[in-house]
Image 1 (tube, rainbow, N blue to C red):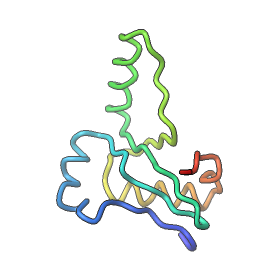
Image 2 (tube, helix red, strand yellow):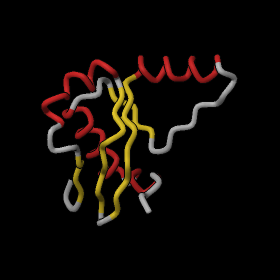
Image 3 (tube, rainbow, N blue to C red):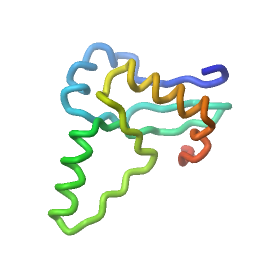
Length: 97
């Protein structure tokens, strides 16, 4: 990811196991070409639960910068960030103000 990086909280490794168990994480950022994007990572199971919950409440689910990974681990988030940058899809994300 030349000129880009995935930014996680400094203490992420201390609670990464809990993030993986929960299946979502919204405190990650991709920085690409000086632009910051807050990312909402979900695994498939957790996303399914969120969809069901919102529909049961009669609401639509809308998550900005939603990225689905096999499991919400540092390795999968880094791989997804690299792919977004490599493919140019990072530019379709909503940048932070």
